[in-house]
Each structure stands twice: as C-alpha cells, then as structure tokens.
Length: 137
Image (cartoon, rainbow, N blue to C red; front, side, top):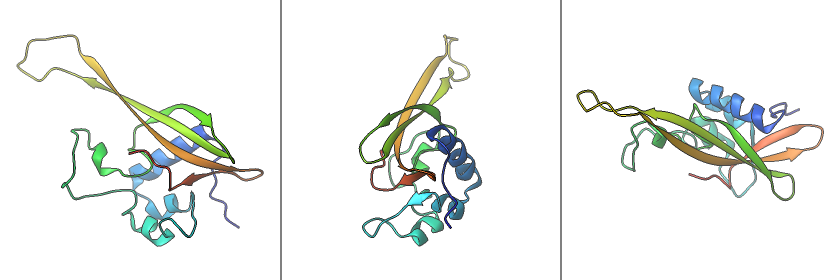
C-alpha cells in the first residue's frame, strides 16, 4: 500500500522542505500522484525533475533557480485555495533580508518577499499527494 501522503497542505510544505534539503529525490518522488501523460517516477527519482545543476538559464543570488519543483527549500506555508476535484493550490513564501553591501552607506535594510505555488490532490481517507502538471515556476 502506498503510504506516502501528506496529512495537510501545511504538513506538505514541512516534509517537502526537509526532503529538498536532504535531496532525497527517491522519497519525494513517492509523494507525487503520477499519470501516463506526465513524467515517469524514474525521472523524479533521478532528481532531474526537482533540481538542475547547469547554469544556462536565468539565475538569482539565492539559488532558487536550481529548484524546479515544487519550490526551493526554505519557503513556508502562506495559504491555500480549494479548486475542483480535490485539487488544492498551495501558496508558499520566503522573506529574505536585503542588507546593504559592505562599504555602502548604511540604509534601512529591506525585505524581499518571493512567492511560489504548487498543487496537491486530496484523496479521502488517505491525504494529499503532489501534482506534476500544474507547477508554477
């Protein structure tokens, strides 16, 4: 029996953060609800679905560009929206203190806020699984 379900959207964010930090692609792959149209479980287990090491695309100084799905580690639960057919849109956010560079005049540091979203599917009596087809990058 497949026991890899999240108890809640908040729990999903906590567990995903831990698995991303550990780069435990194999376990993270088991939390996805897959179908014949999307990526195969082996692609997820390889890590290619979640993480990229090449730097050919746009980059940011925090390294968020490396994490493709479902969000970079360090984000926290922000809210959720119920859609149709048991689909839940989960919003996550992170706030980063943007301090002045050394040698520049001291100013009040600002906070940069970044948000992402990912989708879960709820199955009664079991819990929540991640979806692959509705990922916001």
